[in-house]
Amino acid sequence: MRPVWDKNKCVHCGLCAVYCPDNAIPVKDGKRLETNFDYCKGCGICARECPVKAIKMVEEKGDESE
Ligand code: SF4
Ligand code: SF4
Image (cartoon, rainbow, N blue to C red; front, side, top):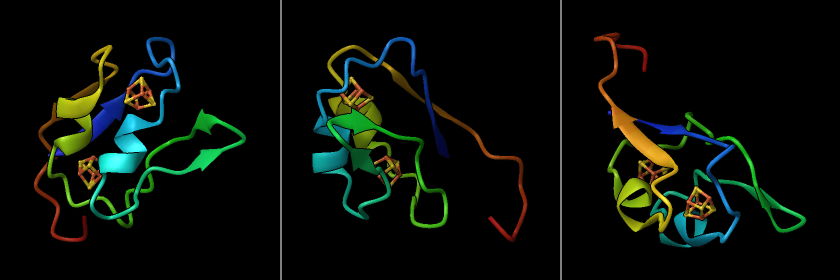
């Protein structure tokens, strides 16, 4: 699974970054940035913790390299 972030919904609370077990969500100057998919393992915690539902888990197309 891959977290898709809706930057228009995001209120930059930073919770997703705090809860992400792999530090895959960068925050810079108080703004959440795009997920780093090299680190993300698709656990879905960020989507669960986001208070405004700005992250949606979607299925990844079966590609071994991902
Ligand atoms: S799915 Fe898990 S690993 Fe990926 S960004 Fe969200 S919390 Fe981090
Ligand atoms: S938890 Fe949701 S609203 Fe907060 S920074 Fe992450 S994506 Fe944005």
